[in-house]
Figure 1 (cartoon, rainbow, N blue to C red):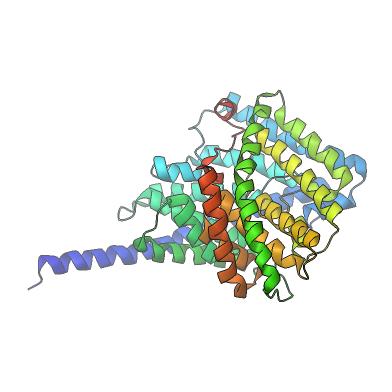
Figure 2: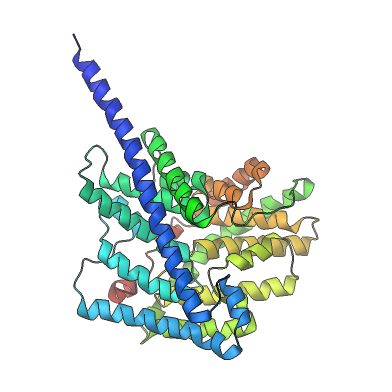
Length: 426
């Protein structure tokens, strides 16, 4: 005779297996959504620049006149989409995925997210200094929400299902499946739960495999030399302290530029700023990934690095303030890395690239208040696995300092939505 306890245990075990299997499905859906957005951005980039490589390389290959005009043209088309959606289409308001999981049980309208993603695609493909991954992850989370609502799955809440999709999206966008799991725990859910560990891991791996199969894989910012830590790595403590103090100022800088969204044709002005700055250096175009690759090699003079940091910070700040749809995750990685590189060059360390990696990780931890995610992200992006204990120590220090100075993290800042300018200006 089967007892009631045995029945409950059997039912619970079945639900856990079902959640794990469903998480794998959602991971594949999320990974495919990321790939789709990335391919659309590549196609639009080719349409505007006739260049299939990186955005900075595309900008460098263009004459100055087109380098100036193309970001403005992309911003014009993004603005047109915003105007049409607001004036002609009636749809549910846009929900950012972290807020949706925490406050709306994962309800993310797909239609409004689709149009926002299309607006972002035109901006990103024409050089806007903003992270393309933000829109990729948002669209993937919305796709997970849409599938979850229609699946009839009841043993896992919709909010949890969206968190599975977000983990897979991070894994797909950055080729970082472990960081995807910690991203879901520390950023999306805001809590740790062992019951979610297996589904999150399976969804993250599923999204990563989908992206790897269709777009290729491997560490995105692989450092092919071995960065050994010696006495000079001790400078990382001071660097982590400095970046922990800098993180609240970084938040405040982006918030202070929100007034730009109230300007007429705000995104066009942002496109003009990007175009003008790109005349000085084509590295202004895009999310900063190519500039980050250059920084992580430890190359470049102090003056050149400072100029690039200032130009990209201004360009990204103006794009965010003007309401350009996208994220600042990769720009944040670049900022931390270049500050670390500059510090290493000024201090005359033998491996400035080591301080660049420390800066990348510590600043991401301080800005997001997610030290474990930042640690795994830095390791998976660079392939420097032996640095894991060192980076975790510095990340915890930087994060603790940032938290003591301000309770705000990067994901506590509601990104201005070009489809809802009134809300963005509030």
